Image (cartoon, rainbow, N blue to C red):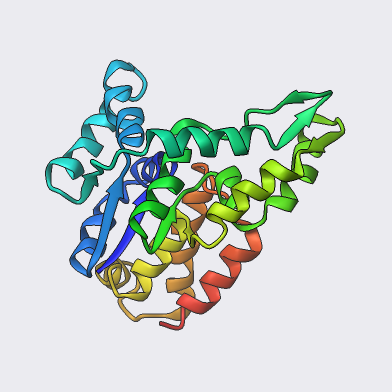
Length: 233
């Protein structure tokens, strides 16, 4: 069984596009989804106290009740604090440290390492880049804030040393996986009764762009590549 640690951004992207049912289907295929305590608190506990997000929290809570999302009982407070120190002491503007990582996101990577999960799922660009390509963050921050960014190489190295080998997936990757496994077969049959390739491309294009516009960090080129590959399935 594959184990994926899921953060709030991935769940929110799927919830906003009525794609939560896909987690049910992937679970049946042998994928276990684990959520750190901080992520559950962020989505469910905080959401239930928000007029704006209350209904989303109610919808998502069903997946915890069913056991599709399992809340972790691992104690990771110390490791999370250490990770946050590394990440949030790595980049400076005018000698002031930049807080680039939130606690709940840090818990995702820490838990994945501790239980040796197969991957983490996050739609957040910062966490993904910290794990996969930390050297690219400096340029992104300078462009965003139009200011020179200094890098504490030691702290960034400490972070990268701990977490560089953790595979990262996004909501678009999970949905593309689900499509390749036939989970969207009923959708294809309804919308494309003749199984026309162009018709299937429209479905995939619509799925992936909906996630991009809901906050998933994915490029137009990546979506185009997925569309071309999956339309042949």
